[in-house]
Image 1 (cartoon, rainbow, N blue to C red):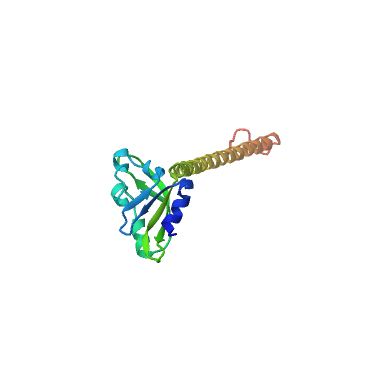
Image 2 (image 1 turned 135 degrees about the vertical axis):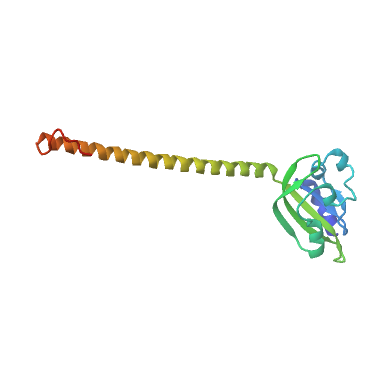
Length: 177
């Protein structure tokens, strides 16, 4: 049993989008999750297309896997499907070999982490906003503390002058600052 046949046995339980290519990088098989990423007009014509023909993606994971013949993984890859939306994926690719150990294609798994990435970006923005707010509050607290210290100093100076006046040590007609 070659690797493609072995994968076909378990492919029904794979819940991430996936596709398989031939040695030229053309899509030969895919699941419903991969199909659902595209508008119907594009999805109907996926067989025989290369990934870069149907999805804007910053790297060519299929060609890299075919050339290097090793498993590759990329986290949070931004991918744009024309007339749809921008997605974020964790991409994993595996070179597939037949019984004679000849390269027969590539399996690419695409975990859609768009929602998680959006939440993470919003959380990061919230943390940055809170950090700015803390800095503003810290500056305001410092300013008010300095003002309170200055007022307290004036109060104690005036209190000392009043004490000296009551003891007769200071003329009541002279005001000192």
